[in-house]
Image (tube, rainbow, N blue to C red; front, side):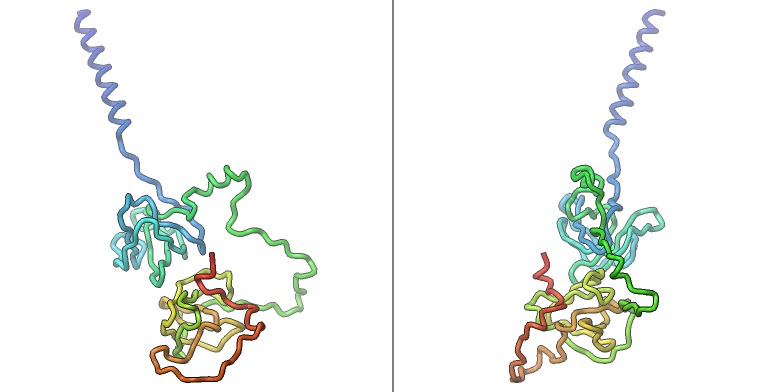
Length: 253
């Protein structure tokens, strides 16, 4: 009986060791980054060197738009969005393309989660630095308040023009007539654009990426770059043109 008891005990020990070893090597799924910041950059990551798909809709059945290498920078437009299976997706723009990438393959531009940054700096991490507004600068109730026009879903085309004067850098199309508004996409030099209304301040309303948007009016030309050049007098470059100027893409860090 003592021999049987020892063999049973040994068998239980072996079974327990096997169970612990199996649990040690069970793979765990990589959790998706859901702390990306809308309007800022993220980077394609965690793909083991493979390319990642950009799709038209936030699900694995969405039509493929393009594929991008790991390390490619994107601009976050919206998200996180959840598909029917519970997967997280972000709407992003890459160059002139916009679509959806699963959150499993996106990370903050720094490659460090927001919580780790907060611990390292011992300061709260926010999207933008707070701005203290003096009481005297707050308009009275009777004063008119300037309203920044929002980009419509799409606009009626009133004219056609081209992107010009960016030194080959291209120009940002934003969702509103504000230099701090989120970027829809970057339109390359020479791109044909649809004009949807008159210039508002320094901003020209246009259609971009299937919807409305705004670009800096100084980078709009009504002369077809493919047409023969026409000699015209030098209009000059007065200093007054510098103030309120939209910076070309290459001049932004």
